[in-house]
Structure formats: C-alpha cells, structure tokens
Length: 202
Image (tube, rainbow, N blue to C red; front, side, top):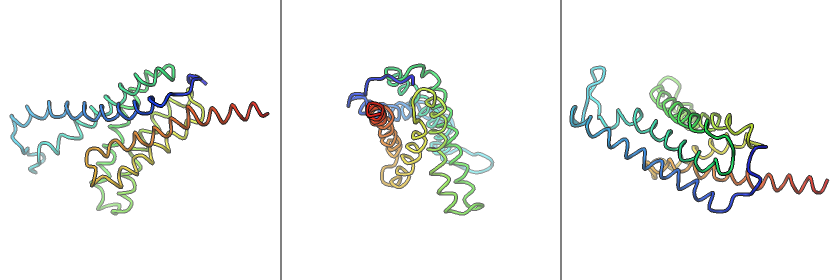
C-alpha cells in the first residue's frame, strides 16, 4: 500500500468537491475565451456537411470536455499527491477518459434510432462514469487497496447526475465529485480502520 497512512481530515473531502467545481469554471472560461473569436469569424451558426448548426453547440464537446478533463486531472492530482504517492499519471488518465467517455456518449446519442432509446440512454449514462472510473482505477489499483470501488463510485455519480441533468444543467457535472468523495472516505478512512481493527483482533 502506497497510500498515506494518515486518515484524511474533513477538509480533504470539501477540497475534492471544491476543486471539481473550480475545474468546471476553468473549462467554461476556456470555452468562452475560444468560442468568442470563432463566432466573430463565422457568426452564431456554421455550416457543417451541408447542415447549419449553432456554433456554440457544435464546438462544445471539442473545447469544453477536453478542457474539463485536463483541469480536473491537474487540480485533483495536486490534492492527491498529499495523500497518495506518484500520481502524475492521474492527469493523463483523467484528461483522456473524460474526453473518450463523453465523446462516446455523444456517439451513442446519435445512434439512438439504431439501438433504441432505452439501451442508448443507459449506455450514455454508464459509459462516461465507467470510462473515467476505469482509467483512474488503473492509476489507483497499485496505490490504494480495494480500488475497484472507484469504478462503481464514478458510475453511480454519473448515473445520479443523469437523473437530474434537466434540472441542474451544467452543474450536473458536480455529481461525480459527490460519488467519488464517498469513495475516498471508504478507501482512505473506513476500510483502513476496519482492516486495522481486524488485524488487531486477530
């Protein structure tokens, strides 16, 4: 186990959520900074493949999602390196998996007519959380015991977010942070204490 033996203080969990919110704001600022000159050149609508599209909607996944994944990975790794050693690869895993998961969900959305709305909707919910959770688990598995819970926490966080997506709009992206903060408590606090008690009793 490479994780820091000290249990996280309560502010670790608040910082995790706050950094996630900050990464959303950073990504949105980057998106607005880049979309403004594009709209000045092309107007509010652009023609792609003979179809007129709203520029903001078209460029959102190509600018906002990668920026969010990168900001998320950098800010999280800065916090995690105080608790878990050798977390540089966390940035790469997070940045790539956010983009892959969300682009995959977008492709599945466009294929709704082929696979049906129920299967498409389920896959769109599970794919981002599962992809991000799996990629980050590859980094965590040799550093934190029981890291498999991380995949489940991400998937559940994204599922809850999907249920409230129409109400929360952009802030639905905070729900994965709520799911994973519970996973951090489990991996860095409850399970180590439980195992220590079991070893002491044995």
